Length: 153
Image (tube, rainbow, N blue to C red; front, side):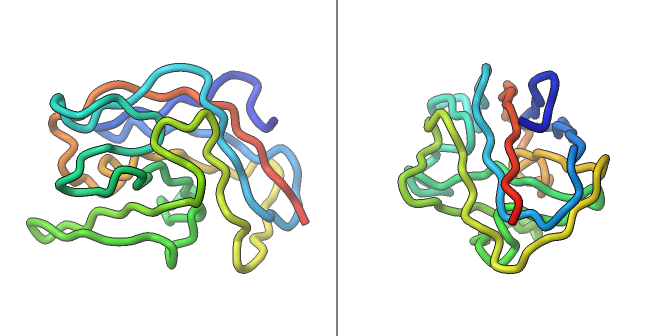
């Protein structure tokens, strides 16, 4: 586990969670384990840990939790795995992972296609996708708190 305290991220207003890498090396993938909380992306939709079960914008198992570097560039899932919807000149990103739903206790990302070299103390951020894209976040609420795990090559 990378974090000493749970890392919490919210659903709006740039409420991303921050953690720092504890070991340098080539990163293979990460997983997030829910400790508490949930996010609501629309008052008419059920709470979620990792996404939004809004059938209009997303499928029933589409996920919106994104890990970025300190420059807000997507790391996990890799940018190539993100699907995009567009509205009002803004792009919203989401993705699917086999066997993982918006209420799964763990969010285990696929292995990176290209190893990412990380350094001890390097900052990473956890974002709810709508907040990250500044898209349709005005009626979002809540936060999810997680433990972060990393696998190295």
